[in-house]
Length: 202
Image (cartoon, rainbow, N blue to C red; front, side):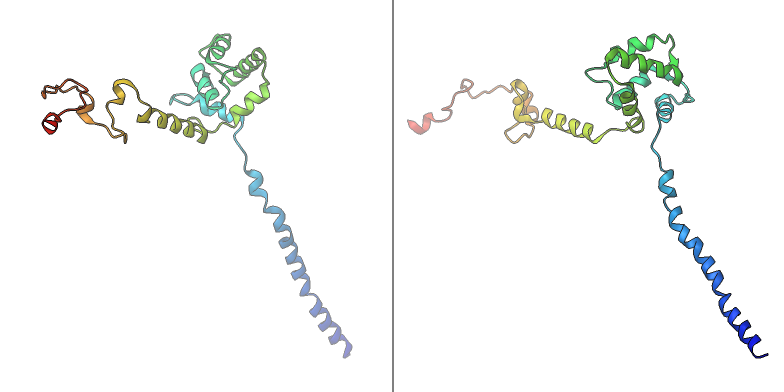
């Protein structure tokens, strides 16, 4: 009779541990679910970009049709239009579609025809256009080039002719003195270097 309670106590001491083991099982599976947010992150597709640029500059557009002007802006931002492909090329091939606006299926035919004519890979063109960013975004490289151009155009030390006379050696503007010739009533000819020295030598 005394053995039965001992067995029951032993069984009770063992059974509470089972829920703990079961409770730990889901915790072991938690790390596997953590990468899910990263898996959901994805870049824009070519179709997404088509929709975005077909709305660029046209508030009434539904994103289903794109114009030549919008296409050129897209290609310029993606650096597809360069020395090898010009706006003349895109204009010629776009007119073959015989429409002012075209859907994405017709636009793919336009790109295929353009790539074939200019000897380029269609996949490379579409990759650039897919990864060029949102409409109107400007790359750091473009900003740096613009800053370099501005710095060159505003360097007064490289000015020549009448523009050079408008600034002093430090680059500061002379104001009206640099823009207008004021008559010298001293009686000396222009460029005379010994002005006001006669009384000192005689």
